[in-house]
Length: 129
Image (cartoon, rainbow, N blue to C red; front, side, top):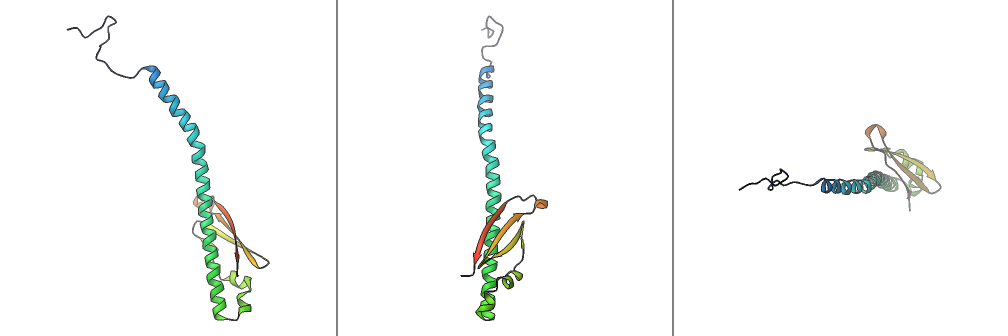
C-alpha cells in the first residue's frame, strides 16, 4: 500500500492550511483592536471609582468628627467646619484628600498618589445636616 500521492506528499499528513492560519490571525487582530481600548477605559474608570471610595471615606471621617464635636461641646462649636477639618487626616491610603469649605458644606477631592502608581481622581461634598 503506497501512502504517497502522485505529488509526493503523505495522504495521512494533517495540518492547517495557510488560508486557515491567516483567517485566525485576522480574527485575533480584530478582537484585540476592539478589546484594547475598552480595557484601557476600564482601567481609568476603576481608578476613578477607587478615588470615589476615598471620597466616601473622607465623608465618613467628617461625619465622625462632627458627631464627636456635637457630643462633646455645644452645637455652635460643631458647626465650625474648620474645627472639624483640623481633626481629619488627609491620608487615605493611595489617595490624598483635600478639603475646601464652601459655605455650609465641605468640598472633598481625592487624588491618586503618582509615586505609588495611582492616577484616579474624584470629588464629593459633605454637609453637616
